[in-house]
Image (cartoon, rainbow, N blue to C red; front, side, top):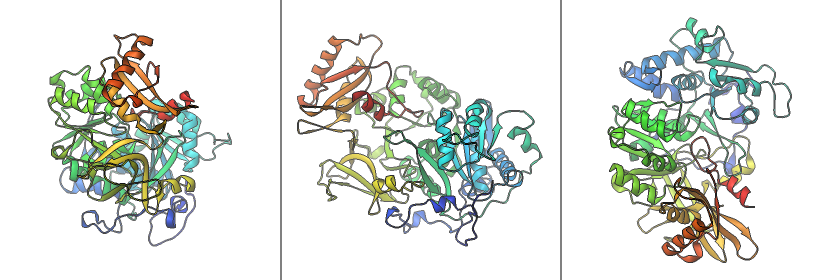
Length: 551
């Protein structure tokens, strides 16, 4: 599966596809290399640092994964990853820099494949098992992928996708190997003859290790490239300065490993300290509660929606082991934070990150949480709020969030989007924030979700927070929709509680409720009831779909 090759001293990548499609010059974000806490060797393989070092430290028999089928030790993961890496190099012809698509639900074998690709010097492109054929074709075309390692239960669409390009031309030489299957051509069977030792590729710290795809606000997938150094920097940032886990913690969460939120919360963070993770193949709030109880999980990563949903089914003994709760992916409503704390006596650690930045860059440790605020820039990052003219906003003045630090946005072959996201070295995440006198950052809206109606700037998140306080509202999302008189109308999409009839009477009740809680000009003049809000596999609200409905 070779691909383009080059002999360069500063990189181990012989296939230079990622380097050839990396932003350059002024399009690159500013990266902080000067901080002593984030200094790494020029030669760095993230898989070796996260996995091999645990074996060297004597942690081989410690549990790394709790799965439905049983537990995996660090040694089993290490040896399985090595066997896969040997197969990739010896039998499949992988050379450093080749991209490999990974597909499946959260499972130890998916993680082993991820480590194997990095060990061999490849670039892991992990995709959610819920993606459909046309989505997989787009990813494979964008990243020029010809090899996929796929869970056998989700291989049909993967094989179909790897048979053709977007324009339906045949994909020549493409291969799909399946795991979690005992067939003679399965990955599991082919590994039996492979040695459990492997000499890791001596990748450079700045060689690309992963390409993570994000849909963004438009729904069009964009590949974001992150290096081996980026992975280690993320593993040494949020956990060290915010979460502060220990080696006896058991991590658990609902996002798929294809998403960087889960990559950090279920792989990078626990393994950096020698802890373990419970990998759930089913990720509903009900399954999450059951998983916490079954695996005695102590650290939970999920979205605000899941915390709110769990409250409806929660029995205190189910979460007796839990002592750290992390939220990201969308804004955490104050009502959800307060309800969770009142019921569980646990604070939710909120944070903002992005696929483009790899993981979270603003948050606060438990003892410094200010309810309603996300927190302050984590050590390794700096942030500011800027006006539309680029000048820095005053305290409590809403504006665009800009951030820079130890990681930054590097889109794969997408100069137009790169120019929007990175400006003068700063990363613009597309969020509107205000920062208070004490340096705490308060989320206002996505910049395309700030509603300007009759000259008023209205935060859809604020209106959502009020609506969620009403017992008849199970879920809601607020956007602006075009209006000839006011420019935009505030519109709420609401999932009503099962015991309430979604009718005009309830609409009036909710409108009056909002007007009584916040300035009347902010109330939703339009309300549409839905049976469910459109969400991604991680539970993140897809506002662009609601905007399409509102046109």
